[in-house]
Length: 191
Image 1 (cartoon, rainbow, N blue to C red):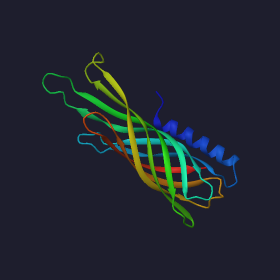
Image 2: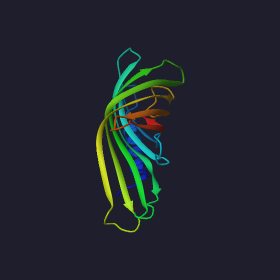
Image 3: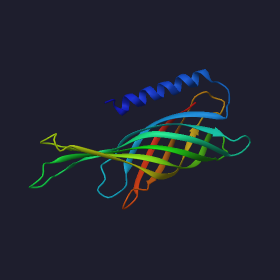
Image 4: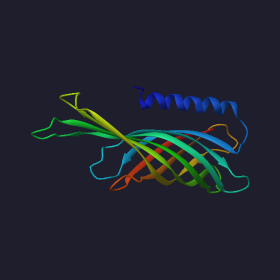
């Protein structure tokens, strides 16, 4: 299994490679991100690494943009005491968001703040690994509809081939019983 860090390094390398080929101001922007993600629900794991990639297409002469985004958010793992009758276990939670995004670009000099909202599918996976036996290990995944709301900043001049930024999002995944709420904080590279 490949580590999220190795995948992030490859994604960022591809973003920089494509960015060095394009040098003019363009309506299409590609981005990659690396950061932290955590479920905000009760009894959720402590949070972990997240990676994202996507594109933003700016509507001509308008402060709006449309785009698509994908990612892998490790939400952490927790040790669970099985008690007297069950072995101890480790529970790991992750989600893969695949969303369409809408952006409102706030005009500004030197940096470009934006607000964003998205709608799409979230593939959420639960892994349970028992310490004393591999026989009972289990995993389960669900695909659910979800939304995200947030905002961010792009630093630098729009004509630069590579820009940096940051982004914060609240993801609300419509899971059974109660929604799963995830906060994601990302450092980004835009090309």
